[in-house]
Image (cartoon, rainbow, N blue to C red; front, side, top):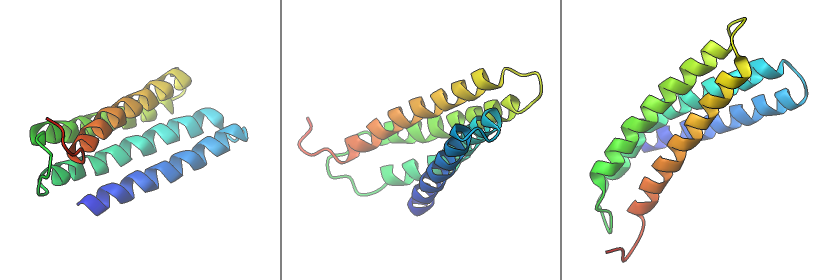
Length: 127
């Protein structure tokens, strides 16, 4: 499951970069930004359970297994929210840019919290 999480994060990042490059090239920029939000949301949904597997690995200095499991759930919830906001941004008449940017903000916040949780697993000598 950990390899699936790494692959999902990598694939989602590559597709989001490609969508951003197309948006910068003025190829349907609002649709590309919404597409990036959907892809990043799906990457979070696929990568979320991988955090739970990392928490169950043999702990050296990791004492926050419950926190890692919580961040796993947070990533999935944030992924669902981001994907939904991205889909809503594709509808005509919707505030596309606002919805897509909020979705990307949600992804960034989830990655920030989850990354901090994972980095605590690899700290050594922490009290």
